[in-house]
Length: 326
Image (cartoon, rainbow, N blue to C red; front, side):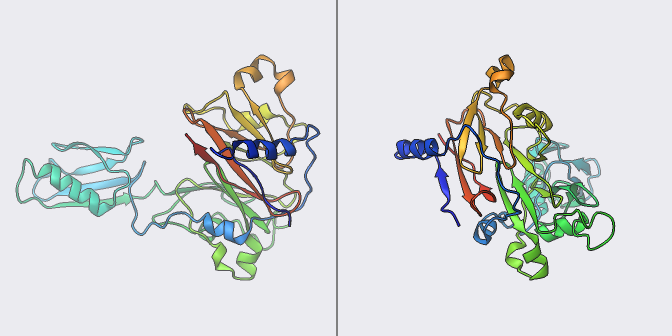
């Protein structure tokens, strides 16, 4: 196993990082091997989402507020994109991130300024905000909704991602799947998890995680950070930076387009691209992509972008951890 290559721009090690990254620059950009590799077990375990003991409200959740003996104050509400609801007399209340009990207490405290001896009950009618997305070789791709924090197996099983026989079973990449969380990603060994019962790999996921189940022969590139649809994309012949960038939906409102990173995971080489310059002269700056390439769009007002490529084999298999130093 090759020693992990660290190319992180940090105060105090700037010169060392520059030297290491410079050593990895290779204009020929070697094509990576076709091995189906996975991230080390300790990296997968460290990727586990923070445990959620009680469901907290979020965008899209539907709730009912019942105020005893005050039907004018009672009613149904949908948590808006801003995480707020509007309750008569109480006004606009921020409830995203609150449990049902916390929401009851908040409404009671605001109404208590105008009424006495109130009894408030909050009921969750429809759980929609704990979403996990799954794409690739599954029976039911798309957004899955949960009323509690799901594990990886919960998501894969509900999506029909573990075919044993029949149509598609010969093409499904049952050996591994990718979990993508904003600008972070790990590959999980599903065969070890399912066949050998290694439940340490059955990690809990976080809201809005993306699970990708590849075909056995899939070659992937990754677009992460401040884009509309971050994730893994199937590498097509002659695929360019602009092709992958377009599939990811382009820049988000918070993106910093002047410092887009393109990372070649096979050797740690990276390029920095200005989106404005790319549009002005695509023939000079529109890079050809290879399997495993990573496009990372940083967030506006962030001074530096650091990353770690942890290699599971000499040429492939990695976990990515984005970090920002202001």
